[in-house]
Length: 88
Length: 339
Image 1 (cartoon, one colour):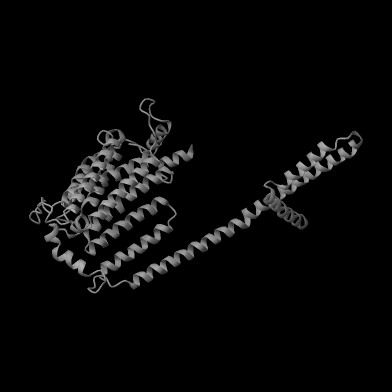
Image 2 (cartoon, one colour):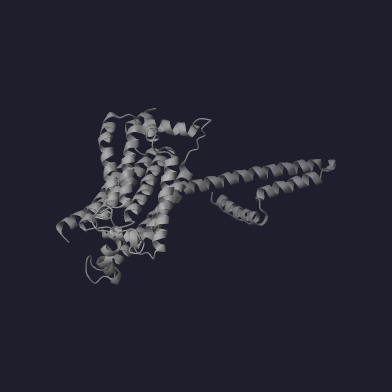
């Protein structure tokens, strides 16, 4: 257990807690993405680069993109267009 | 109030019992009885009594309705005031206890696991020794993980690719919006497209310029990862998802029309089908030869060269194609319900 390991694992715990505790769905999704990224770094440090590549591509990339699309479908992303619609 | 309430309770129980017995409520029963009496006893001499009874019936009927409403109101008030709070508290308690239980079991399991990297774990046995000692000689792959996934345990990988393909088919069935060529686009499709446009302005200059630079690099990196799956970390699955990420970036920047020029349902179908078919046939041949790279007649080549390790590179390409197509079609179906 080196210092880097402990810092990364602590960040994992913080990310996991904040995903479930944030109110905004978009924020929690981005935190989830960062969770996957940290996990990829941890795989790399544990000397399994194959898993690291897959985690970064699938966990941080594809899954999050699918989540984003779903949030857009259920109108959970509140940007400028959402405010426009609320004014209407 | 309390008297009425007890009255209602006895009433409800009685009605419930009757409803269980006969299939309809007691109120209907009463009306039926009164109607039957009306039809059987219509003698003119009993006109007055009949009228009287009718009035009593009506009064009883109205009273029943009023009591019913009161009961309904009481129930609604209870649900909205006390019941909801009770239910939410119950939900919180159950969720908390379930979460604590799960955490306890997971921590227990982790605590019982052997130390990371220690030599006396149960995983390190003669199988691992054999993979490490003779993997390079038997599979010809420098990347021992690729050798394991696509040679020793190729059957598992075939199952994984098939599962992905079936998942894509299921999503296709669930989310695809039907589109008749002659009748033009369906109303839902137009609505989805309008919605899409409303939330994401098309032809964004910055996105298009960056996609122009990034997409070829991402696609090239994906192809590199797939082709070097037996030499360096990576392989079919990771390379395929990188390629599909590049395709999704292109689709986001340039829209469905431009992406539809090179990727349609037909492309998806043929690429996935032929890749899975090739995988199955190649592995069948390999198993027919005794699942042994040395006797199959396919040269293993010099370890470290790009054209080496027998079937692993073509199998990597097949898996990569299936994964790329599947992920891309997932995204397209989630977003618009079509390609």
